[in-house]
Image (cartoon, rainbow, N blue to C red; front, side, top):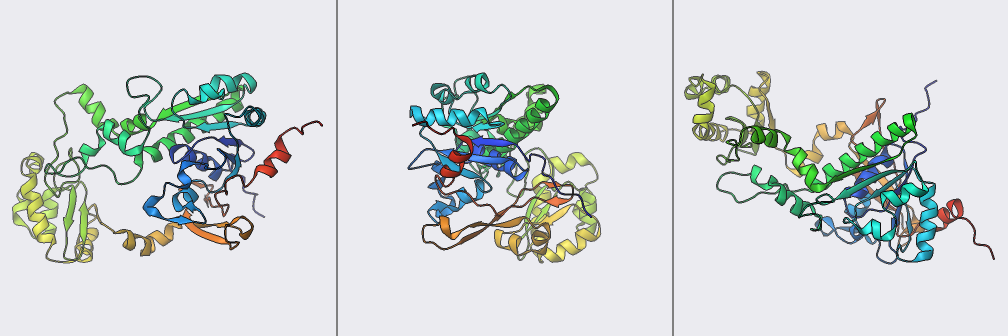
Length: 396
């Protein structure tokens, strides 16, 4: 007989006031760990993420990206500028364990649902706030959007070659990192509350998250101002690592090489010029020459041909997979990183059941993969359920 599996946050009630990505994904991460998440949206339009479509793709009236980042939640509507709706939400706040919000600084204060106001009616509340650039300083009122935060942080200057302009990361990396930090801070405060009874406020921003991503660069530069970003040739994958660190064309694709001794690579590939470069300083000084030799040589055969040679010698390398190659690969299948969420026919626009494939939580607990088939809610889908469970009946 096996023990019943209990997710770490079972029994925790989260109110998700956030929209689009960083906040909703933070709340979703908590849901995957077992929390009950109720998403609170404005009537009529809801979360902007319902219409801001990744690749222009939608399903049952909502963007596919909205489905992906709001799965495993319930949903209600409330106009927080309406006194009656606000009073009902405050009643829900009293019973909650966690609040997640990612409005610009000052918005929740004006509504009366900022941390200090909430703590006054629920001292045990754990409150998670994500902003664009923090609550102070000259950037605090700028739009909190991923590309903009990447750009202010300097991150786009770390990719590409010296001949390129700025190259932003092609996914919402600032938002995703922020969601992880908010979920981490909330979980830590929940643990503190168990020990002390104290709630608390976890805060971070898109900018802080992208700065934290650059901890190696910033720490080195702050202690030695001569260290600066100087991107290298077209095959280099890192401004601060020597050859052969980079990506190289093969006859049918690309191959990535990480940190490896150049003479070892030369011996394995039969390149005597590289075998002679025994001084690691030369791997910097002759970086582009080394990369050019490797690129010319790798282009003579297939990616798999070179992998067979390099893997056998335990060289740090990997194929550079396309999206299609990734999802078709047995390695992707082995991870079981996908799951199916189902919006039943009673809550779809056309009365047909909607099944969508999406990713699962990347965390495994006690050896178990965390999955759920619970879909993102339709706008206001759980109004009646939540009203009946949480709100006091109005006396006649």
